[in-house]
Length: 345
Image 1: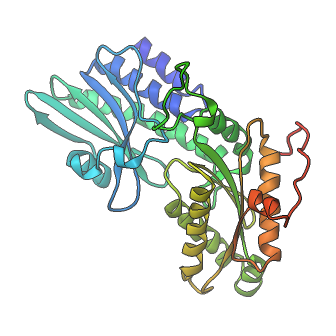
Image 2 (image 1 turned 90 degrees about the vertical axis):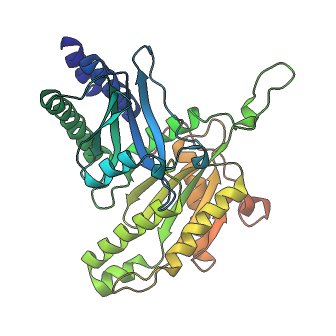
Image 3 (image 1 turned 180 degrees about the horizontal axis):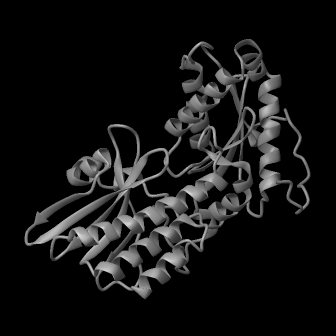
């Protein structure tokens, strides 16, 4: 039991969700000594949901394994292939089932907004009611701390990441960029930086949002912001980082193979927004500017380039997507000298 308390103390001592998931499965393994314990998140578009392994420990493992957040969704198992997990997810109650002399027990993992995944335990015997309550207590601690993180890191209206988390997640995302799956070693056996996928930062601004507030009131304006955040989630992939910076300004930090892929992602959001009928308001549009994140970029310098491209979109008639690099290459915008290392966020 002291080891479990130590794990819980470690879990609540970090503001890193990856570490929290690893310490959670470690705590449950020490508490129950199962054959395996894992956390699975349900990700992907409706009808094509997949299971992403957040952390998994077998009885003899020294280190937890996990799927990379940038994994190709098509490489992950379909949610429908594991009906007991889906039943746990949708019913929001524990599930327990005998499987060939062993027992599979699942507990839902919920945020304050939704159920996002399951904890799956494989044991030699069925979990007793006492152990079930103990696991439930551990998960409540996990849930409560996740809620504290959400309160500090997320915009209260939309649930997107807030502005103050941008710098840390920007630097982490860029530093953890993986090698492309199809990358092949060079003659010296190394995989070089050039083979890493690229990150793009996009700034999204609602066109004429002041008119919405003036004509319909701030409550309807808030509903537009909330609905746009949902359109953003459905337009981008599960591992893309989405922020509300305040007012009608949003930011997306996405991983793409090239500028064309990034342009398609931002164009998809623009089209989805243009076609959506917002209650009472009707149709609205967004202007988008994006930029490649360069080696050595600071959050402020990348944001500044994307923001300049948004300004161009506004000046050119709104409801457009523009790449900063393409505007510079076409002579429609001048490259600005890099900002100093002093961060503006």
